[in-house]
Length: 480
Image (cartoon, rainbow, N blue to C red; front, side):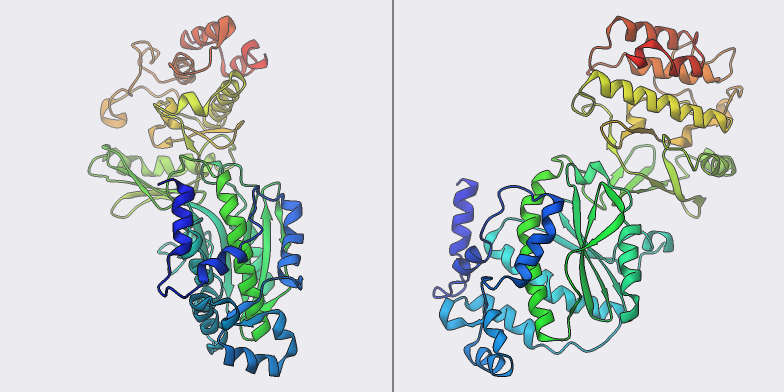
């Protein structure tokens, strides 16, 4: 059965053969968005959905409709008797969220109430339309205060990527603070998760007042307001939020086409035979290492803490958001998260000579920052480089770093790294030239774009340790 046939079949699935919710949902989601709207066009979509008199009214039990219309004649623009559409299942959900009493309460109580108005409606749409298959995740008591301060209160995940998020506050006067936190918690966009996505829809809620906003990749310091404030405690506010939920579903369904096909699932754990576990979050990772498998980390903890502190401002090295420290495991929280460049990934993540030159330039700049802090990396291989955008790359795995110029000691530094040549050390010492020789070896990896005669000469000069770091950065191959 084709995907189109499967969708068509899904429209017909009803718990009650007389229930026409499938037909109603299909009408509700029209016109189908065939292309992702430009960020500049999103505000007008929201204005149309919220205030256009032609918006399809929501079915509710006939008696409830009549009672609401008697109280407010404008309800005829929002509601309709279910007997008109026959959308019984949709009517049941809408009726439940409209008539339910929402008591004032804590941040989490209000968040649960908003979930019923927005996420539950989107769940119902997806039950019939089957276009999104989203998951929701709430930030309920993260162990680390640092992580809790970084993660939005609500994350709606589509194909493992964060596409809708929210911030909740208890007091009505904290609404602007909630908006500010939306910006602060999404300042870095991860190409690994977001691919070509140019904007994220989100909400801020405080004291039951909800404001819908948009964050744009090209304007990280601004949070664009898309709607006025809607109260979850009054009928019109709830109806507007249901309309918003429907538009959200339409936008997210088409926006998911901009996501990368090979994204690592959010909160997934990558395990390595070295005893290292990497937990992948929105734009950072949590690195935990079993110190029984890597006991040298215990002795080197102070040294690594100095290293991460000294390189904190680097734009070319992975950075520490918290740690490193050791309780039962060596733990450090690192950012940003990028695309892996290990075996099997090089050929489609570095797909042009210009991109390869950008990667090598970033690695050399990372070494400049590292060497300025009096450290050397020692394990420069493509698996230890991440791609953060088409032109920016970072050197990672700083746990392999040693004091620049140190005499290599098996007990203190461990075995020679994978890929070292016999001449990697200079008279038994690990020098700046040793790091540069490893950069030269990167250029000889299979699967890369052809580097040409100049690139081959550059690689040979690096491996021969005949260039200084400054000379390497100004080499003709990098300028071409």
